[in-house]
Length: 268
Image (cartoon, rainbow, N blue to C red; front, side, top):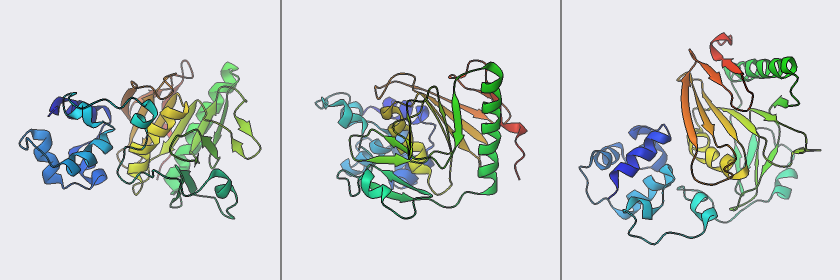
């Protein structure tokens, strides 16, 4: 059992044992025993659930003794518990809905979200103002806008249309009449307490595969910002994750010199 790989991957994703237990459906006691090394031979279904959360394949867990899956797209996509294999809804079906506000289409599955809180909207507005002021000051040809804005992503497991909280484009070629036709270079999402699996586990995988270069995930409850830097990987393995507190200034790689001070945003 490749325990070090499990621990390393959990650290990269900034997950605790409690997070892994909640997202996988495995009891916290079982998760603790596996990561401590007390359980030497976990049940197969238990490990499949945990590996799905950590975005690891069985060959990586079992010390490379199992044959490696040759298809990169299948290795990156669809490995999470509950993730849809066959799409139930297409992008065309989604756009025919009368009310699409606070809904997303994730690999063919319709996801409904709760209404955002005051702090949620205040934070987005604060970041947007800072980004736009910096773009204007430096004369960059970038475009930043807050959601809801529909963004269609290229995904192998089904049509996907998300509505990020904030996006920034380095050009204009993504802009269509009904939203963005492909992924922007920068995306920011504010973490909802009830949707942590989607935003912490599913969304980074989708954004990396679709071509987003930088993804900020803001946790209002822990006052943290998780910054994913995918660069130009476009779905290839290997990316950087950094975590900042609201007391630290957060640099945006795509805007040279830009530092976001979340502590200056007037939150309730």
